[in-house]
Length: 137
Length: 137
Image (cartoon, rainbow over all chains, first blue to last red; front, top):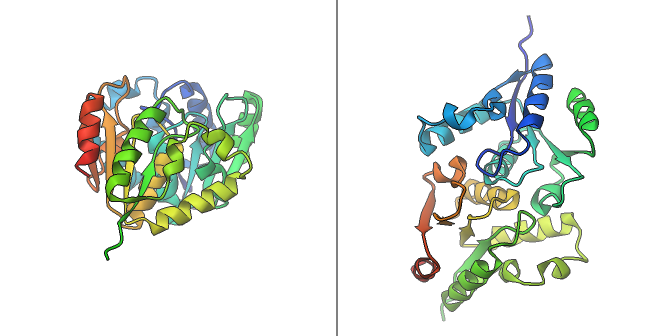
């Protein structure tokens, strides 16, 4: 019996929740093949879910989950300090990273992410494309 | 003759330039005591300044500057993938990091930054306080 690979999904939390719906869709697709360690990133009630937790607890929990991950998938269409942190942390720990980014947003992807060849970039221009890309991971 | 310490200043670029004015003020204060490696982060014409540069060039240049830094100062009031990346990269390379954050913004600081005790947090609630804090670095 082979164990499923573990994926850490990254999305913006305090940077803004405008893509919550995309996070849920990507997580649902990843769950078909993988063990998703951070399903809570897609929760509608994420603020309530975390309300009893200190920042230090959240940081240590998420870093521990990231340490357990075989690979990382990050939806980067919303700017986020936490996602940027997780990307560099993953790189330092030599985990494969897939970066998803919607080219129709009005901001360009950070040069520190777009210019870093260690991240596999997966660009899309529609929800259908995003879904196809997520299925291909 | 003692050489000045080198500081890498981080601020949001593609994440949003609403704090450009603060970046300029902090950089001007840091320049009184230190060699600021990233003065361009405060430039009004930053987009034009970088217009001839590819993302890969910007990434490799900024990472090389970060490698040269003795310490890091990051203004984190605007969410930014690049700043988040630079913070985790600095931590992985054991550089001291000062995080400045305006408590009057309508978003909380990322738990991945606020909860990470390796970053020295410097919170402020007014421009005068920000200036005093920057002078104290």
